[in-house]
Length: 234
Image (cartoon, rainbow, N blue to C red):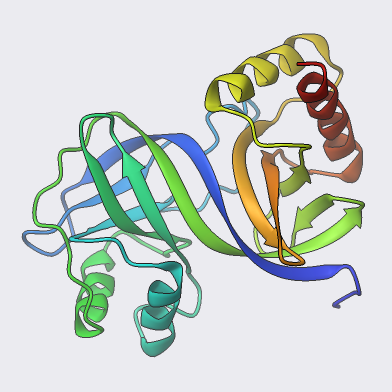
């Protein structure tokens, strides 16, 4: 049941992803990769990871989130009513690519069908991509969140995910240093984290996405306090 604290926003998440190319059940002269360790910073037993995990359908040029949502809305089949789509930009250091990010696709056997449906909507896929082990991936997506405390949110569409705001934008280096410090010195239990941003009430908010099984407001509050203290102490 919806509450007054439920908000629907768009934003982005940026994180280092481990990627593997897929070679079966995809269209000829196209490239698809899968994030094979989606929550690498979380060392618990992740029991409910979707199979396949996040898929990246590489495109010949960048499609905006609006364009990708339109593609998805116009496709009546291809399992599109169940999946989550987003716009993605992948930086492999020496090569940079655009992609359609697809989550919760039910199986590997029908990826080529999804690609065919996208092509009918005008999507142009990349014919050749050089995939190395890791990429910095920025995903532009939509969120459905419940604000459980001031500037602390729990995802209502994706299990075990929460979001906290931070006082200001920080670099990837600062983020990594603070994260290591929190994990080594705080009583916040194990979690995976990634940086991001959202537009909330017409204002840009810098956020941290948190993943942990059985996520709750106590954990999010703990992490938020540690991040805020570390950022403001710099």
